[in-house]
Length: 273
Image (tube, rainbow, N blue to C red; front, side):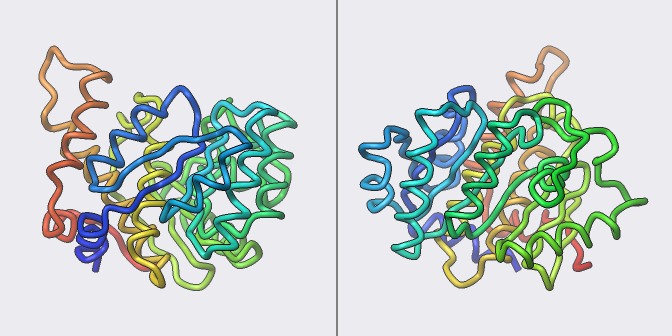
């Protein structure tokens, strides 16, 4: 199901514009290179739309949000919409501050995003104005588990339908939906939360998969989520007793570099809800 999604990224090598945060920009760039795509980062309002026009896809990440980048996000997002290019929103920390929440909601209103990649706390903030977020992380009450999977899937599908986006909500269990069909993905390991930026990297990766696979947004987004989780699993098996989260971060990128389409097809762990 997902083999051809990665093949398309490797063949097309899409250029992805990332307006992302300075904590994880380097890792996002290297992860895109590892999957076969190319990164560019431009967050000045004077060039954001122009750069977007050169690219096959856009990822907007609120991780280190400031007032000077909001106009760039809006300009880039609107240009992507005008040109029919896929755009991904990562509303990092929505609910943690008024600025983050209001900016994410404004972007959702004014930009025709293809996908929103977030955790369940962030999604609930955008959908209902309530959250149990802990900083930029999901609150304990919003962890997706086997016990609350059906309820969480219903919330995510409702958000997807109302905003007309692919919703990719990640956590201990991931849910990716277009509002009608939903996939439950069980790739990934808890240690991935010990590395700053795995979610940011996934959002950039999702933009690359969407750009290389037009017309198949649900499948492309789900393939990206499976690939990231699978790389986390494989990277963990490389760790020695002397390795920690810094080595793990690098191994994730290395593992994606070596991931084959057949390896993704074989390792993807998902079911249709």
